[in-house]
Each structure stands twice: as C-alpha cells, then as structure tokens.
Image 1: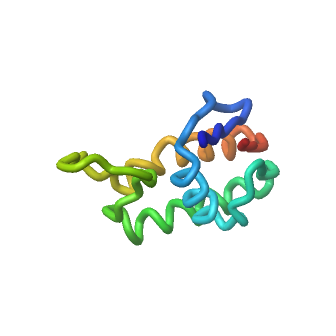
Image 2 (image 1 turned 45 degrees about the horizontal axis):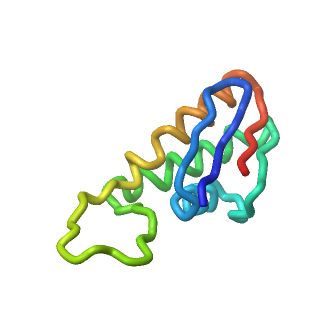
Image 3 (image 1 turned 120 degrees about the vertical axis):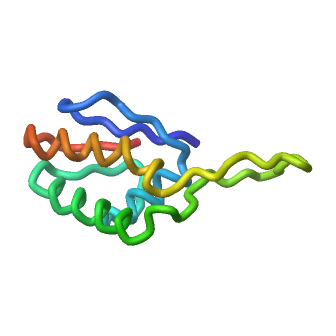
Length: 103
C-alpha cells in the first residue's frame, strides 16, 4: 500500500504505507488512513515529528518485506531520512496556513 500526503503549499509526497503510518503516529495522530490535519494543528504535529526524529535520528524505518530474498542485504534507511520529505511538507503547510491530507 502507498500513502500520499497532499497540501496546496507543497508537492505531493508518496510513501510506503507502513512507513507513512509510523510517521503519522509520530505526529500525534491515530494513524488512520485516510486522514487530515487542519491548518491550525499542523505546527504542533510538525513539532512532535521533529522531536521524535531528534530523539532517535538513526533508528531504522524500513518498509516491511513479506518475503526477503536470501542474501539480500539492502541498506537500512534511518528515521531522519524517511521523515525529511514529510517534515518539509508540514513546514510548508505551516508557513502557508494550509491543511494536510493523506490517503
């Protein structure tokens, strides 16, 4: 499953579902998809996500692989790298006073 984050203030971002749900929960939301943040709630969600990333920047946040191949050792992607596009989207939405939606 893929989840798209949208706001008029920034380009649409698409993420793997399990990664996106984790980031949504780190923003202080229930993790429900579809979902949204009203413009007045975006700054607080942004701050919660930034705080979570600052506390565990090197934590691995990779999509679940149902059947990993033998010998397939792909590099892990950190929470800080996975969250960066969403942080930028939330930052733009906060500056412009726009809502954020995901589905």
